[in-house]
Image 1 (cartoon, rainbow, N blue to C red):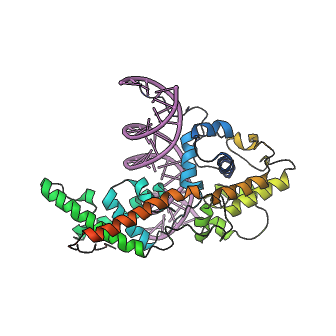
Image 2 (cartoon, chains in turn green, red, cyan):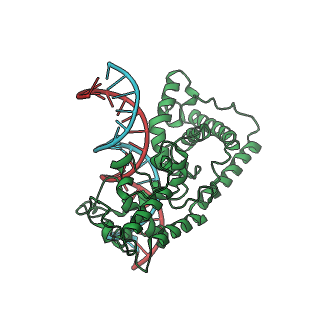
Image 3 (spheres, rainbow, N blue to C red):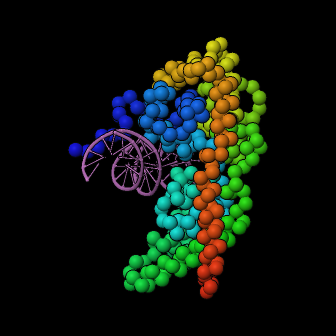
Length: 313
DNA sequence: AATCGGCCCAACCGCCATGGC
DNA sequence: TGCCATGGCGGTTGGGCCGAT
């Protein structure tokens, strides 16, 4: 007998998240913190699987996420970490605090893997990831090769890290006055994002934020602010997203009660406060320092230098 | 202008690890 | 000690977008 599914298939909504759902999820998490995902759908009224909620938060809504535009240093770091760790995207992402494992995985699959394959086709075997190299050699040869790979990767990583200012340090929190969705941080950096381009004043209705209206929906502080403006201007009571929202699910948005006199303004402010909590980014910084120590140790131990990694691109 | 095909990425699926009972 | 619930991770998919024809 197979294991029961993590969530009931009936009545569980799938597909892209709506702004209303994002706001409900964010407001819940800023109140209770991430975790206990099993309780999230029932407590928020979201017709989503707990897994879906967690993924939405970790891959999209979590503060401090940078989207798109991978820098050269990030590319190199990913390439070498992949060579070191294999397809352990979560581990790789821990060294790129602003990137999600899903983002890195997608970027690898769509860009870097192709580049490496092209480079490999050009005869640059040294640039191949460990996992792609021939495995026909004997154990001793394989171990020596692996150690060489690690040494090369360490050196290249250290070089990459030395010029990695700003990647591993969170951006100033008040720079963009953003909060929740520092998705906003990434979105605002993307000049072509709808949110970034719609910086003019005026209230934006929910339907204007919806994917169908103007491209992919990106949850930014600006969007949330406009959403809330629209709500507060249209609804006289507390934040009960109502009429304007043409929610396909027809369930959550209008049914959600934030409780405890939680107004829309308070939701937004509290969401900002949550982003200022360091716990979200802090864990990723500890391994980095250990990582740097490890790299430095390598310098001490690696008396016989290894040739620097030749970047295939 | 219409169609086609490739690219990109958000989201889903299934498996595994872990912790609580 | 075994079972179960839950969270986490990696692989894969589906659909929108965009350039080429």
